[in-house]
Length: 320
Image (cartoon, rainbow, N blue to C red; front, side, top):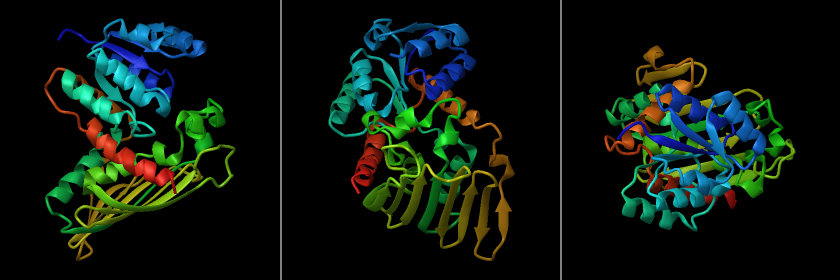
């Protein structure tokens, strides 16, 4: 394949991140789509790239890869439209907000034999790949429990825009912390599929939004491990923490302090090499993986079928 043509659907912050990273990886032919005229003009000016005001017009350009970075509500239908045209896919998380058309998407991907990866940038973070390696190698023994927390203060997430207008704050765009958080995807990748879930959600009214801003869930994995997860838009400081306990030791990862292994004897091993200062590195690694994938050189790290299982959990949480 010559240098691929890429269509970016959605020119918000994540769409622009993907654009910058694709350009950094040497991709020159990138087309942006967004229904918002101001975003299109900004994209053309700052990126020096072409944009269009209609998604179908973008597909008529015959892109090799379509990046779905639109609000959650549009992910599945836009992915189906792109797959119908034979385009490879990078779909931002979550896969969607319901399962209604997911089987059709999976069928089209299989029939067209296209590469489709669902956004899962933390799986490309060196601390997460190290945790998975240590767990698989039995370094902490038989894993029996984990505790996970992902939280941040929503108004600080994109300080350049009114958080109340973003998709996260709006039910009509498929927002809500249960759909926004990465933690369900990451912990099932680390510890395996989930067969039972109990959860509670709430809109605390602390923020002026109509979506859930706090969710707490207890998961039972197929291997019997129990996980508790807190996801929220409310923490006054950015918080992302994992604690995974096994019969031989404990893995602790904190966004600020990095990865630590504590064994039964209390001995502690730090992994400073697994801490990165620029989180965009994991997004670049994901971009490189996708570009390899559309050449047929590697499978998706998170397939649509994988993401569909996470969507099941997200839907169950949203209904509590």
